[in-house]
Picture 1: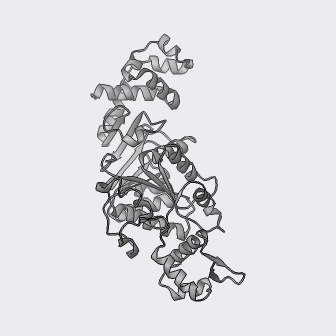
Picture 2: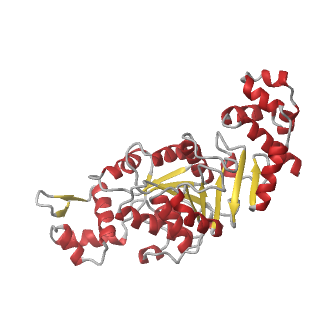
Length: 373
């Protein structure tokens, strides 16, 4: 593809503006952005477009597209139109892929790496922080690129943890790639640019529109083989991303949460519904180890229990779960006594107890003692 083709793609997406669904439909029908550029007013009318869109498409000036190309070169931004080979194959296969993708950063290689999203609430708990940190670090150590939306909470923690583990991370933005949203993540964006990339379907200087979050979420799941939900209340945006992933035929994983907390309502519903339960990175990677053996590095994980071979069954118990079951097999015990008699952190213990309750292996009596069911 020559520079002229990229210029025409920019002209087309800029002329169509927010009418992305119509833009996609017109491109699918014609199969050529060059044809769309050469069309006349009467050709555009056949699509049933409003006059203001026909006016914009009838203006054949490429000045705006040229300015964007100049800006992209100056700021090291790659522009990937839909029909170029470098356009991410997984994203191309969703039902509503962006026609143009802006990529800014030092590393973006979805053709040769496994991309997995970690998403969740902005109101992160200590348990959520602990799980997001461990999963992002372990995925990064396995050579996986951790994807998110650079939102506060779970996604900020996941991006940072992947970077700290020496891995790659990609953030999908609700604005142009030269802008930061939220502004408090300016430093994080700088770090992401040095350890991966930020991507967007929006042009330079485009602000965050109300519809941008849903649009961004379909790209997050679309870039990835799987999406992991760490903490999400019922009705949260993270569940929207999970639903996009399911619609796109991708895997959805969920970290179980405390059944008494509102912030866990969404993930626990996902687990009842369609998601695979995740307590450590192996629960994610065992699904991909045989399919993508060349893309996964084993070893170097943050928890000792993860050094074992990939489990062959979904019903395995982790070392932490076995420890708790052994202790409770001797006598029922309260939470503080369990903390005292194990080397687990409160986050690890909370997560393990929640998991065992969901698996129907333990229960709590009226005195607050945990016991084997």
